[in-house]
Length: 185
Image 1 (cartoon, rainbow, N blue to C red):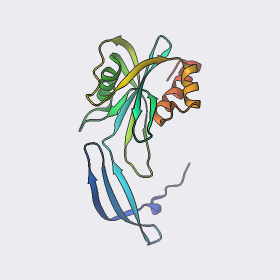
Image 2 (image 1 turned 60 degrees about the vertical axis):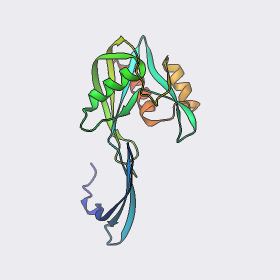
Image 3 (image 1 turned 90 degrees about the vertical axis):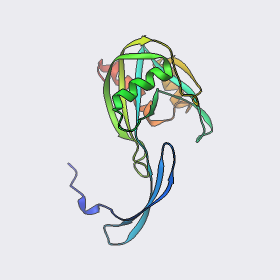
C-alpha cells in the first residue's frame, strides 16, 4: 500500500482567473511547493462528462465526428458534458439518446476517471447501457455526427489506425473485451 503523502500537498497562494467560457474556465494558480518554493499551475475547470458503452447485437454504438482540436475525424462512444448539478447517469442516458437515438432501459456504472489530471479537473463517468430501445436521435444544433455499430474487431482496428484515440472510447473497448471474456463488466 502506498504511504500517505500529505507532506507533498501543494498549497494555493493565489488564484488568477484568465478565461471563462461556456464549457471551461482557465485559471493560473501560484502554489507553495513542499520544499517552500513557489510555482504556477495552469488549471482548466470543467463541469465533468458522462459516456456510454452501448452494445447491440454484439456491436458497439459509436459516433464519428470532426474534432477541431485535433483537426481530424474521431470515432467515439456517445458522451457529453454534465449540466450544472446534473446526475452523471442522467447525462449518460440523455447523451446516448441525443446522439444515437437509442434509449437505455438500464445504465450501470463502469468507472469514473479524470481525463487529464495534470492540468484539468474534468471527471468522466463511464456507464454500460442495457435493454436498448431504438428511437430518434436529436444531436445538438452544432453537433454533426454519423452513428454506426461496429464489431469488436473493427474497434481494435480503429484503435490501431488512431481513428479511435480518445481515452474514454479506448477504455470502453477494453471494458467490452473483459465482458467478452468473462460475461461481466
